[in-house]
Each structure stands twice: as C-alpha cells, then as structure tokens.
Length: 284
Image 1 (cartoon, rainbow, N blue to C red):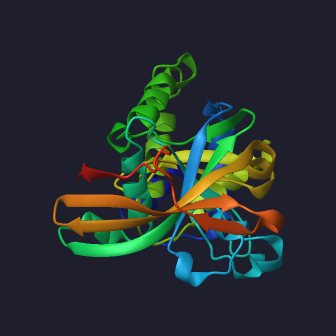
Image 2: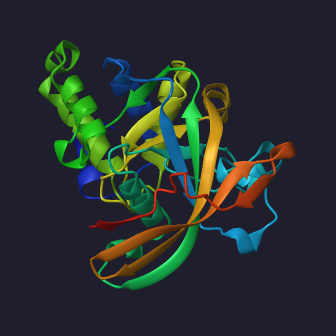
C-alpha cells in the first residue's frame, strides 16, 4: 500500500486489508513527531449514559468504563477493540456547562440534533483529574475545531515548528486520518482509528483527544485506557438530567444529584437551594 492507495481508501470509503493498513500507518506515524497536549490537574471531564434512577441498582462502573469482569461484552469502539475496556469522555465547557450536557446527549442519541420534539432522561458523571499527563491530540482539520479548547490546541500545533517542517504529503496524511476519524460510519469501521491509537500506546501514551463526532465537532472528547483513567481521575459528582426539546427550544433540567457511596454504589438525592444544579436553557 502506498500513499495514493490510502488516500483513495479514505476519500472513497473503500474497505481495505487490516494488515496492510497497519503496516502502512505504523510506517507513516513513525516518521511524524508525536502530536501531544497537556491535560492538567483539576480538569473536569464528563461522560453520559442513557440510564436513569428507575434502572437501579447499578454501581459507579456503569458511569465510567466496562470493568474487567464484563469486558467480554465491550463492543469495538473508535479507539478500542471488542473486549477491550476504554473510557470515553468529554471535557467540561466551563463557560457554558449546559452545552456540554447537550452534546453529551447527542452522543447518546444523534437525532437530538434534528428539528423535533423530544423528552428523555440521561445520567452524566463528572470526574476531576488529580494529576496532569500528556495526551495525543488528533485533529488536523480546522473545521472540526468547533470549540475554544480544541481550537487553541489545534492552532498551537499547526503553528509549531515541528508541524511546519513536515512535508506536504505528511500534512495531507494527518488531514486524511482526521477525516477518517470524523466519519460517523466508515467502510473500515473503527479499524484505522484503532490502529492509530494502538501505535501511540506502544510509545507509552494512553489517551487521545479528538473532536466530538456525533455532536458535530462542538465537543472536545478524550478516550483513555482504564490505567491512565484510574491513576489520574476521581469521581466528583453526577446528576440525572431531563432534556426537553421542541425544535430550537431546549431545556436541560436537573432531576437528581448523584454521589458515590460505599463499595462504589451510587446514592441519589436532590440539590438544595444553595447548590448549583446547572439547570438552564440553551439555544442550538
């Protein structure tokens, strides 16, 4: 496989041999400086799941990643093989946290982004980083940088000396990989994106930051191995939200507060008047 072959595979969405893809991608990635960004301590990330209080009992693992004893049921994802647990989350938009809740809801049900009436409950867990770590940054198309955090990281790398010194073909290669990563459905499924993360994991990296695809790139997502997640994050709080949408009018209200109990069980309560339940209306 050469560069022209790979370009055609991505642009025309053609099924390719996984072994050939892996050999080609590993060779190309080895010749490109590793694109990284620092995830700082005291950083919030969130993950949403389509469950509510009526579906109890369940414990904290239901809000993070599939635990080892259930990993055989883990489906293949954008950055994990079938049977391989992985944490998928989104950095909290501290300026407009309700927007984070909205795009998390879109990750669960993409039809939310359409013009329609919809009411549904979902649960969001918030996690706080206890220490910083380097993560792979993978976004090389500016149109996919639709929020300030990702745009700043994207612009910093694009303007860096290591990127400027890449050949035209190497830059196009990174653009093609970003285009493949951002497909909702690909002829190759998640094979290419898994190969990319597999390569960087051999270099010691255990997380990758990428644009939110179902949310039309307005979220800033991170995928992490259980190891780096467990080492770097602690449960902060959770909440069950009710999203009510009528065309462009969207309300996200808080139904329950969720806290960690003993043995990783979760406890439900309500926010009191002095607490911030982050209930607000937003516009699409």
